Image (tube, rainbow, N blue to C red; front, side):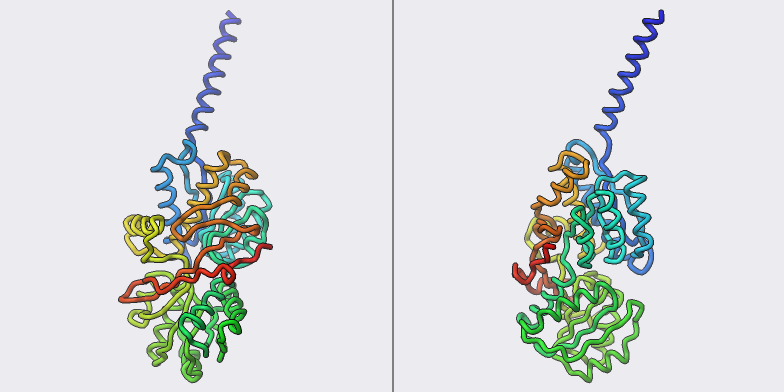
Amino acid sequence: MMRKLGTIVLLVGALAFTLAGAAAAAGTIKIGFHAPQTGFAASDGKSATIGAELAVEQINAAGGINGKMLELVVYDDQAQPAQAIPIANKLIGQDKVPIAVSGSYSAPTRSAAGVFQESRVPYISAYAIHPDITRAGDYVFRTSFLGEIQGKAGAKLIGELLGKKMVVMITLQNDFGKALADGFKSMTRDFGIEIVNEYEYSIKDRQFGSLVAKVKADDPEAIYASGYYFTAGPLVSQLRAAGVAVPIIGQEGYDSQKFIEIAGKAAEGVIITTSLDRDSDVPETKNFIEAFEKKAGFKADMVAASAHTAVMVAADALKRAGSTDSEPLRKALAETHLKASTGTISFNALGEVVKAVQNQVVKDGNWHRHSVIDDPGLLAPPDK
């Protein structure tokens, strides 16, 4: 009797082990994701999150990753560094994610990058631009441009493509604005640009009367102004209302339909350097724009496309690694070569991407292609 009971126990144990294995095989693979769901950057966070969710839905509809479905684990970092660190620890310690994506700004992404690096969990910055992010270590990657690279592209756009030489700079006082300004200034001599004046402003500013008066008195040929849609909208509107009619060149921070809504008719003719070409014939870009707008109910923007790209890159690495173990996954990421909605993604030794800059212009109330900058020498990021 005892022998039969022992046999039954063994059989039950074996069955439980088999069922557990089957459940694990049929389980999900988690991808960590943080973005500002609330606070001043909530609109960008919403777009980024929908872009990331769309990528997961598309991958799962196509069969998932090696037989497993993806699960996006989302947290709200409020675009605050103090929120990003506990979120990173929670994704690693509680949620056990094998890989994570930042759909947030530079400051929270910089803070989280060190946590992921120390834990050897691969981490992808979708669009944060600060150079120190990838310098956290070899487990950190970026699928969008460095701020300095966009600044250099802005100098080429103004000095060469537009042929304007006398430029006023209006610089946002944060990591984003400083990085763009540094890149722009580094190329002024190459493109024959003279900086007439540079003015700085705070991310809290919405009234620019005194600044606008100074710019008008400077009488430049063009304006290079960094900012986000919620600062750039009022700034551009007030410049135009004061009669400043010269070209205004912005960057990906403007890249939202919200900018056009805020600035109204003043947005017409504004040109930006960014990652998303609305008039692209590339299937990956065209299909993303159509699918995003159907899912979201509003127009695609750079942050949505960048988050979509980053999740696609994470999924591609998971598939090629055939594992969620950290080192094979890191190695697969380093060897990425993937066509995505924001371009073809591959990384250099520092985890930085090399791809063309898409210049977009506001025409008839929408973003459209202006030109493309595809200069490997100009766009090459640092590799150490």
